[in-house]
Length: 331
Image (cartoon, rainbow, N blue to C red; front, side, top):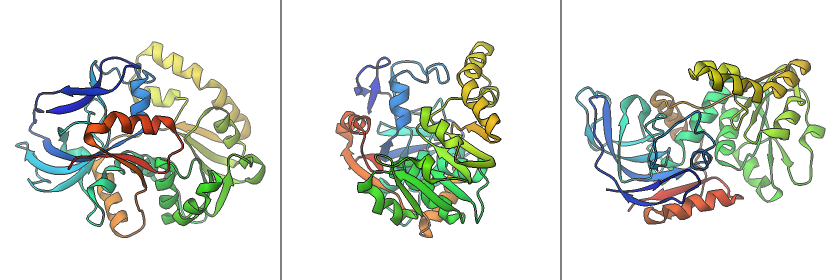
């Protein structure tokens, strides 16, 4: 079967032939109808996560899928042939830029029935990230004030909607051309990141979801109320993350050093900082599907490419400036 892989870090993505996937007793074999491109694909291809995720090369990229069940393992009980499903396969089993894939049943959910498979494929990674940041880590509840950076992006567009569903007042950063869009998603306060300084406008926030890192993260700490929390999805990783991930001692020491500055700044300000590296969860995707079908969350797809142009889809995301997700489709 056809797939798109890299032969080495920073090497071009290209078409390859792969054997049909082996299906374990707890696996579901899915015919992929659509897959989306994420920043994580770009970072893995660049070698940014080779210490945390030491994948063997060559590597088929892709973290999101929507498609049709065409086979099930002997111990699979929740899915049957013909089901329309969506998933973000767990780390170590990625590779959705292909025609078929075996996915652990615990990572899979029935896709929302009210949207297309193209829209469904845009959701898993970004929706799980938003859910785990706001519901699991942030424990967002009515009356809180939440700052979500890059509101027109993949994670931001879903996080705004989820935060509003959870009853929060939402501020976001976006370009002026996307201001109306993020307001339509539920943003109460929109800050033009080209002409305005969010630190000068915001204060007393309960939670910040930061997707940019660096100076943006440091400034985000200063808009929090005492006891508030910043959750970063671009880094730097923290010692807590390193311990939970079971990383080796030398790598844990390096991560401790990388995040020392921001953790010290947070402590001095009386706030906290956590790093989130989302995990696969079919159970959470089932809940997200219910929210989509109830109209609480709508996907935001900015651009689509046919499967044969998968490298162009990756290039489009790397070029920046896109609204929503880039999705690859198979007819």
